[in-house]
Image: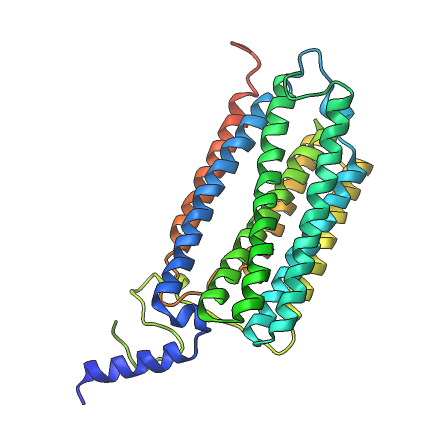
Length: 210
Length: 120
């Protein structure tokens, strides 16, 4: 056997040890592609954070950050999102153990936590707008709503994605394709958690420090 | 690809070891439990420090930002399995690039606004 053939054999053995979503070349390319989407989303959030940093002191005749933000609400939102990041992490772990019912349960819990998060955020926004602190009040509030609602919209999209995945997983089970979809969903969800940690730190904690 | 002996890692060009793929599939998700606990500790610590103002605000802002970066790294490493890949984990390069551009964008925007003179 030539050394080239030996190399190929070693590579096939190596591939057989990978999880199905990485063994399949097309699915693994889609995972890499999803990472590139996350890269572009990092840049979008970076520009929104930069906008917020520039406008945070431009309060016009509106309220200051310290007046607008309630740390209790922000803390509850943070805890919900951190927990949902953990639950989807467990779902991926269960997927690697081929435990489909467990995957469904943890994915459903993740979607439910996402819904709780978005609901609390909407109540918070509605409360701000009700007392006249809308996004047209000052440059600070414009950039605040833009940044935080961009994140909230991402989470809403994630919930729709998770619910669709729940139906598909129930119907088709853990196939190479559904595994890859669940894997990319988990990347998306964890990414949103990271962005929220920065929103919590920069916007809500930062509001008390500047 | 060369170097068929090594079954666990694809042979790399020298200097590119950091993108060689890694997988971990333990029987109990211990990593995830620790990652979750650590993120909770970091969140509550940052909140406690801010509410009690344990140091000057500008220094404190730097500290809580560093803690947020730590939490982000935790998510990437523990939950996102950032090094999992079929071959070399090439996505690490554009991801690092995006972080560098993002930090530059936010950092320089904040820095330029420290100069109170000029247009507002």
